[in-house]
Each structure stands twice: as C-alpha cells, then as structure tokens.
Image (tube, rainbow, N blue to C red; front, side, top):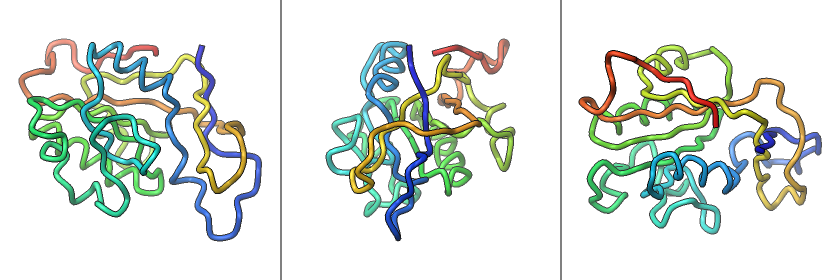
Length: 177
C-alpha cells in the first residue's frame, strides 16, 4: 500500500521553497515501470543524487527548454517521468504534451485540483492514474525532516502518448495504482 504526503507540517528554513523540491518515492516509480513493462529512460525534473532514470534533466539544464527526446539518448518512444515544480505545473503540463506529440511517452504527477490547464490536458491523456493511497513524498535534504505531513488535495498522474498510440475509441482510461 502507498501513503502520500506532499507538504510538511514542519516549517522550512528561510529561503527554502518546500513546494518545488519534494521527491518522488521509488515505490511509485517502480509501480509505473511495472505497468509499462520497462524502466524510465529520462527523469525530466531531477537533481544529482535524486533521479529515477540513468538520464535526467536538472534545474540548471531547464527542462522547459531542453529536448527530452534528445536527452533520453535516442531511444524510440522514450519513457519519461516528470515530477515538476508544482509552482510551474501548467508549463510542465504543456511541455509534457509537446514531448508526447514529438514521440515520447510521458508520465507526470500533479496536485489533483481542477485548476489552470489541468482539465484541458487531462482530457488529452491516454491514462489518468489515481493513487489508491497517499504517497509519502521525500522532502529535500536541507529541511532535515522525514517524509510526512498533510495534503488535503491528493495527486493524480497523467500519461501522454504519441498520436497513433492512443485508443481514440475508449479515450482516457482511469486506473488505480
């Protein structure tokens, strides 16, 4: 069973933005990889020492400007993971969709709130996955705290696939992880 938590009850040190650097637990990544039948080729929003694929894009590389397909190393239909900074979720939704249009298979995790561009992009997704339990996200190490806290909104995952690989008859499938 999975347990989810995004924000912490602990105060962050001055100047540290806790919203944008919480890390995805490996158990969630392994569940998606099991469903896909392969490992992720690229982690599009990662840091040194905290990435879920051999190839990754760090903050200094700017995932909104870097070509994810090229960075994945020439893999056909690369499988990309994106746990974006939630303060920029709309930009990363658009970028994930753009990369799918160009040939990538992209999984992105987002707060489950129907605001901004989420309804538009959720309709374009091949799969909308809803975790059956809360996920215990991992806080940035500089906070000095363990995973935990509260998040009343929960999260969902969207999977975007290249055109021609989506079942247009059934549309978006909702699955439970």
